[in-house]
Image (cartoon, rainbow, N blue to C red; front, top):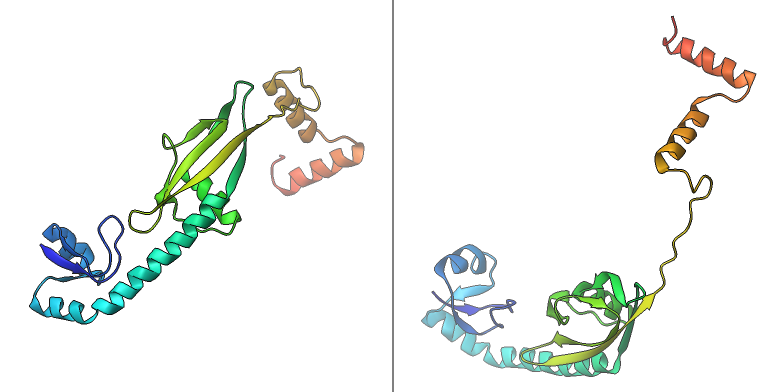
Length: 197
């Protein structure tokens, strides 16, 4: 089915583009959401009248894309991640991580437009990340991943005891009243609760 796009649709096209799509996609998604109109003589005439307006919108997008490219390529992003002695990360750096780091620098990019090498980075080092901008424009971001030492803390008290023993001991101490007054209060509470005969 032939349609003309009313708005930019990701992975399909921009406003004013004529596209051939599956009839179900057009009827169930594009047309009800007013993202496109059916290609016919009436819609072609309407878009020809809007041609100068559409061209000015596209030109503005190109200019903002070029300035965004300069801004991105001027940034060097450094991400600190927990890593082992061999440089392997405990976790991974993904496109969402890069989008968050760019947002901290005041640059908002949709994470779907960020291409991380191998979909995720799992070791420390220097990488180049491709960010797709408007049309075929791309920016290359320099990304450095630094390993952070992971500190393992020993258990406070009874660190040598198995965990089950420590838990049992803690439960027993919590359940047993310490003084005569606490025992009397526990006995009275049990009677009031109807637990004692």
